Length: 326
Image 1 (cartoon, rainbow, N blue to C red):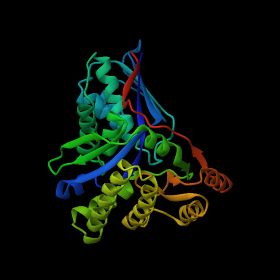
Image 2 (cartoon, rainbow, N blue to C red):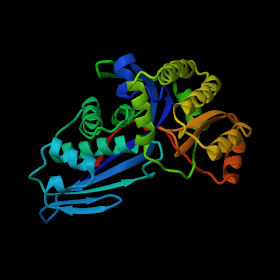
Image 3 (cartoon, rainbow, N blue to C red):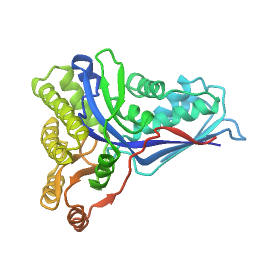
């Protein structure tokens, strides 16, 4: 039995500039942080022949091409598992479609498990590249590279997306005190909505590829806000970081009419009146988690709880995708 876990993530700045439609023309940059909420993949060789896949559905097939789950099918094909009998099970701490990068975490965990099955090592860079190859190039998902890379590397990491497709990763330069303050004062609340990121990101991809002036200018601005957020964090100015989150959110909403709704806006305004300095919706938008940087955590928690939102507490993960049992 092989068990692999891969962390989910939150974006601290520059989100959206990791899509090929943007970085291939202008270069992208963002800060991402892995958190201690995970996607788990278990893999072992069954006594019966075939492929036994268990996620939100159950599949039992004789041939790889009969597998309905696209990521599992393409991962097995890409890594040459056509002649192996396998049982694969997926579990997660938080459901998919909530903006925390679960698809990228799932793919990196699956690839890591398949390498472990062959008793082979894989570097985080290679792991992320293979996950992106499957999701972006083979399956043509209109997504970025952030999720796969932060899942593979872990930590609080600055990524630079070069025009030629290369990705550079470097840890954010903050001390332990600032790290702990950031953990203590970043609060996540579930909106109750889940959604597929592809619909909103597809709109961004289409407009960017058509060189839509408004969309491109918006992403330029968000990239600049991400760089300012990096500076604020590394200088230990967390209040400024919180204010920049608010600026980021105001511009992020302009990318799509489906990014937010009245209920989300009401919750956001309530948070700002009850202890939050700034915040944003995590992920592509349309649902998932609201994240706030708080100056008064108690007041914010009370207000959100009264409004019916559940808080998910977290710490940062510095291990990335790893084998738990082999």
